Image (cartoon, rainbow over all chains, first blue to last red; front, side, top):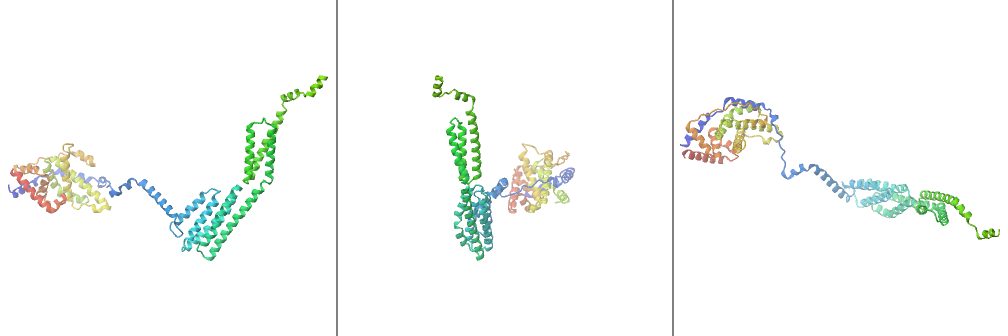
Length: 311
Length: 174
């Protein structure tokens, strides 16, 4: 069979026709189906190398933000005024002050002020930023003496004042290094001097208060000590607990006095007084019990015995 | 492609697709099922593409070539699954809410002896050669369209067609 004949025969296959009813039925059925119902959501195609992003999206975003903040904070610590990260540095320093305890706050604030002054000494341009920071430094230096005043315990206040005074010695030198206009420079120097003199005044004042405190209290304490010794000698049978309690109170009162905490010392002395008075009463009662009286009456001196025999 | 255009396209190609499938599967009923699936898939696919406005580049460029491509894949799937699970209109209904009215449209197609011989020969040769011969001489597809279906170059299609005819001739002579 020739190729032409084969092709002719193949063309004859065209008489193969599907059932006409079926053709109509199929078309009607297909067209009845609304395209919306047929739609399947097309899967989103992503580059394989980044496909993990979707999977770990929930963990990835916080981790990325965390890293971003860590890096920002790290780099901010070496930033200088005028740098975009410098506000983060000041924010961190403010947080440090805020989180410091009442007793350490003045020292922390002073250290922050010093750090800021050091930053300013390294910068030449950015006048606007410098003047802004100078304002903050002045405010901080003004707050240091006020915060020392807030410390309750005199001895701690004195120690903090002395620490601040020691640390603020180089403030003036640092202030001189900052490139500022003459007026601003003078004003900063004045603030530094004011702060230093206020701290010095506080040291004197607190020392005086601590020294004044013992004038009447220390006498009381000495007196109480003597009384306690007398009572202890007189009453050997006193319970050990009471003796220990008294001793502790005396030690605490003495310590409070030394720390300049007059009120606490007074409270302790009062407690000792009360305890002593209780113990004295107990002793009196104890010495006048019937058994004791009987015992005392039954004891006859040798002279009395002789007299009785004579009689 | 809206309903009207699809309807026209359907009328133009239903016989061709049915013939192509029938000659490859040798059963009118199976040919109907596979043809139905092919058209249904085309309808679904073109509908999803026309709604996907973001990805207009993925539009069907040649509906006819695409339809024959689907039909060819259906035949391949049919032979793969033949031993496992026969394809039927019931399974088609499960796929896409297709109304299965269970029509009795099967018909006996009478062919003369020579045609039967050619039909058998077509089934005996390489399926790819058979497909190309049917598309070229029976369904009047151009070399370009055949190339699109097979994802080959037109030159390759010409060579394949020549080899296909040689193979069929040899089969008929033997």
